[in-house]
Image (tube, rainbow, N blue to C red; front, side, top):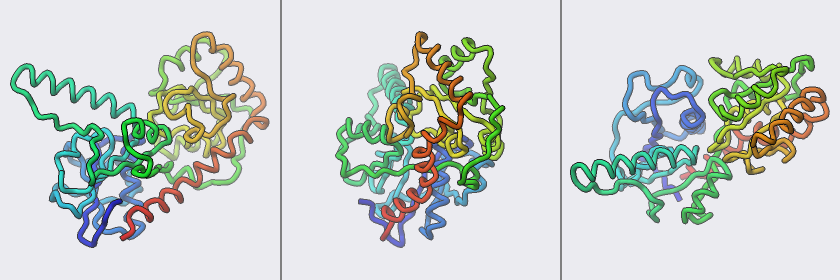
Length: 329
């Protein structure tokens, strides 16, 4: 269990100038702790950059710190992409926040490969990586049910895992009631950075449908687009609980998804199985048929997404309550 004193500093490590789900969660954490009157909460960007905090996150109240001591009273929040920091600060309490299991595996493989190359060319390096060793001052947060399974599979007992999920951008939470839809709007929304191969095959196989990429927009613009639309389609890897899936359901979009990553688990993507597909070329006609049925009979389908919407709308409150529990003195 984390131990916080009046002298504790809470240092939240974050990559600079990055606008994705993970960095937003880290800024939300700093902001929420500040609003809960938790003192000495700081963002620490590595590598160091000028203007490291993205403009998109100006809605979150944060304070930056450039240096700090390795001290047992300090609490370091480390995203899974930076687990190489665990052994750099042996004295401090450390929390690994598992926001993206897949990203962790990619970066870990890269760092180990780089270390091995260096060892072969020059001299043997000491392994500085964290390999789930049972360290008494290292704690685990799972952002998704899927990530909790991953760390349990690596030997972390269930009673050492806290479930700490971020929440969608506050602008999406301003209209929590039923949203008036234009039923003539047959656009299909998708994230062009995710599931590129699968989406391109679906688009190629359905020239009669109108596919709209959600890109180059701020949160307010994305919200307005989703509020006008009936359907969001996602076949991405989803290493954690995906932000855009949650944003879309908050605006009463139906969802058709793959079964990659966290999407496979009902606990993370709380929609009926009939809207989830194991993608393959022979499944494309079934997926397109489902898309057309949702667009033609939206009112018959949207009620199936109420449980997921309710969960998403409650995430900020759940986040607050969990932080109160963890950081109480």
